[in-house]
Length: 415
Ligand code: PMP
Image (cartoon, rainbow, N blue to C red; front, side, top):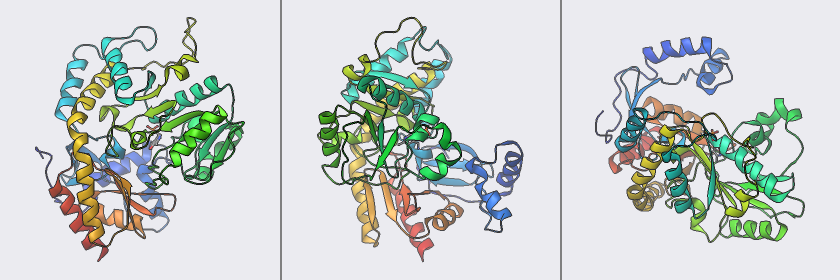
């Protein structure tokens, strides 16, 4: 478990006895709505027992559980570990920062890491100024507020199967399982949101203030819109004076083969939301906007209109700077790795969608397949409202050996 290049090695059944014991303790003390014990509730209803494994350690594309089993992680931990779990350069930056200055004061007092990060975000995105946050949904909230302020209009357009997080503002624009996620809270979410079909006809935007969209949908099923659709959407926003927000929490930082997915087309958002892989394992996010969008906020009048205790946490900023430096060398490898993997999957008869290392393999019963893959040492999740694809979003540093062992195991599981 040292070089990050390993294939699975299982020494107990999966999940093993230690994982099971920990999950029993978790089930007593965590809100039952949290995913980790979905299986426990399902088994109470008589379904197969598929308790999760409890992670103990991770490095590169490998995860080690509390029973000592080694897995290959084809999710990059929800897309976070793009430069690999526990990337040495990122860990070194975090350690140095922890030993120097682990915390500053949000809007009141900044430090130099935050200023460096804001500068590099502007350089990489081609946008101007940012609001930092701690989670993807934080970034979405900041972007929605920016849209409200810049457009002067309250209405928002979002898209079917879109996923933007589950905080109240983000929940209001939920497409992905929107009825289920919004249901219990619907009467607290306002009525300012309209929804259109992702990749479909662009509705009249006359009264819309903000449009929020993923350039490629992630949780919604690794869905790529038709070529030119984002451009048409951007044109319609310009014509109607609507603020265009690209949610690249999932697609950002090299996932799709470029720094950002919007760079595949000749289109630029007013506000870009980033998170997940940004610091390769620290909760940090950003809403990065044009000068026009961000300056619409006006200057702080003493009390910042938008801030939080941990805004621009120095450890997160230092880790993000290190992750971005690592990505300089990693991103140029993504497209060739993607072509190679996709070619092999298609050779084996699979239908594959997505871009870069954000691929979806169209299969029936992906829940059962992902469960069986875990038992054979691969962490992989279904995606899509109907779990219609197996999502392949590994660390961008995953090796061909690890991917070959995944392909062979998938073949075996499907037979
Ligand atoms: N936007 C997109 C596109 C996402 O994929 C996610 C997380 N899956 C979010 C927003 C929300 O991010 P977080 O879970 O960090 O709040």
